[in-house]
Length: 285
Image (cartoon, rainbow, N blue to C red):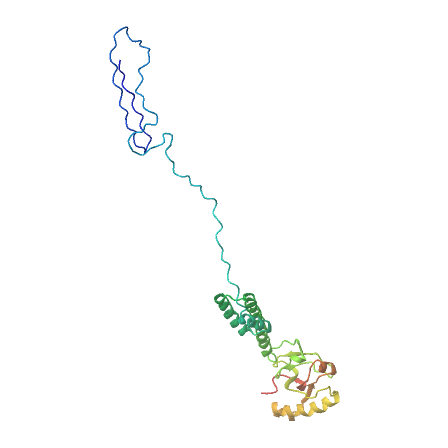
């Protein structure tokens, strides 16, 4: 009984097929007892060990299909290179100037130099930004202070402009009297700190008409001041109200510095026309 030869095992992927060995011829029938069905098949023709077929590439039977090399996955990302900023190229001169003028109260120059410094520092990579900012802040503070002083001065000037025409009789410092103020309660006391200023339309005892300053370097004494102030105030009354010189109800009165006020810088002589009896209206029409 003939069995088909087993199918050859296909070669591995990528290898050329081996040359097929021809099957042996069938055995001749034999006479005699039937062949043992369990007897082994006839041996195939033997081939010499190491016999090789025609030239061709030799392949190792055990050589597996080569797998592509495994790539090791990269590790974590590396830290990127950080370039350091270039060093500062000195301190900006305008920043220094802005700080100086800010401290001294040079508001306009403090602002100008401060803004110029901030512009140049950024472009030139210079130091001094803190000084420029400080100069601008100080200049701003000085501006607020100056504006406040001007506002107070304007308010005070407006209040003083009404003195002598619409006063309420409140006591006013003798150092704040102005020409044209109408006064009450003139006395002969040696020291006067305040006097009531009233509207000139109301009855009043006196009217301020002149003021001048003494030129001595040291306190000359009360007698020397009186000798100088009395004739000077009389002459100034002629200039202020000529008709008042011959008026028997008008007399001259003046305020002068004491030794204590002289030490504080007081040098003013205030000339006042004294009325007896009190009158209404201004001395100078």
